[in-house]
Length: 106
Length: 487
Image (tube, rainbow over all chains, first blue to last red; front, side, top):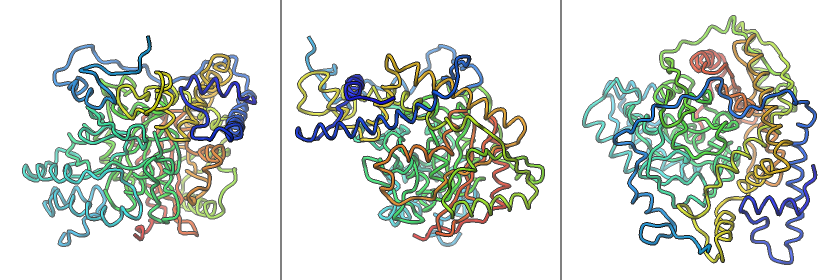
């Protein structure tokens, strides 16, 4: 399937990415055209899947042949997952007290 | 061992024997490897961070209590691909966006390695978020192939494989989502094992494609992989996809008799176009196998034709979901100069993630988006089932599947960076295994005429790691032994 610029822009918006970062205003159109072309080539290759009739095939989302094995839901002492909250807050880009700070949304 | 300067040359099991016999101490082994890293690292760039002080401290503590044979990796230094969380060291995943990420917890694999007495020596380089097959897409610069410094080591676990071949460590852990252990092992000339999906816990490993990712070991010989797998295999309450099946004995293994070994060779992988040197080396390896009495049978696996398309839809879809968490809010790098929340997300992700990672996120977002989901993601998942059925069907009649690992040898830097689709298509040898979920073992089949290693891989039924290693031992005995890398 060919991908047009409008679709590419919509996908980039969903992915929270800029399509042609660092490209000067005047060259943006060329850069976008190249990117969309390259993207379309990759998506076009994926279209070979259309050769197969899979109407009766159940999708396989995990290769496991056995059911998953959840553990008993019991708290464990000294669990490394319950790491010190200070460690987690200590690597945040921006904090106010013990809260993560993001740009104002309301 | 009189000469401690040569301890770095010891393979894993030889090093273990020497340690248990007290021929040398864990500290002496660590010093020898750190010295080797200091000499080789400026040439190959395999490590993102050498944990010298931590390794020395651990070795000192181990030496103080003395050798413990009940611990399978007592005193053995090991490198870890920089997608595993190791407490006290940053995990960058080869990405700028995680340049300042200090994990507050440790991967199950790393914890089990420590419990087995291993020493974590260094964190190795990789393609950003393990997306790539050349280690050229690391935000921290490429790793070079120790056999030819102007060529890539393969990837994404390129630092792991290059470090093993450069004798920086006797064992390494990498991850394999579409061939990322097996292919660099082949291109650098060492052994690498992708265990069955679910054999090893993924807890604490940065996720790329969650239904494809699997952790596994690399070493210079097949037999040295056993103790590494033994230390980490088994159920983990922190990863529900880690199988409840008990681990087998991967250490006390015996080479299978090649006579009576039935190997299935998928026509779709053997009949494509090859580099002539690779082809000649593979043909020689096949005739050696036949001479030793192995039965080689060409089989059709028609669904392999679709595997590259299936893989890149599924891996990209899972990547776009897994990497949505990198938004500059709780950890990682936040861009400056944004105007609003969406702008902050967009700018942080665009500046922090590399070109190939952004490309795959876009592809995955496309495949999962409303209007395209059925035609791409669901369709790929349906064809994935057909690929798995092909794989299991062939293994009903053969002991293992035998395939090349790469149709070309290690290539010069920059060969495919402007042509992603061609590079994706090169992965056809390795990625079907991740779609099917089985185990695969890559080992050197010989040296090509250009002096570059050529690899072969054996693939087996789910959870057949022990017979796979035993068959690998047999093949290793039949194929020529590679020389040490001249560094």
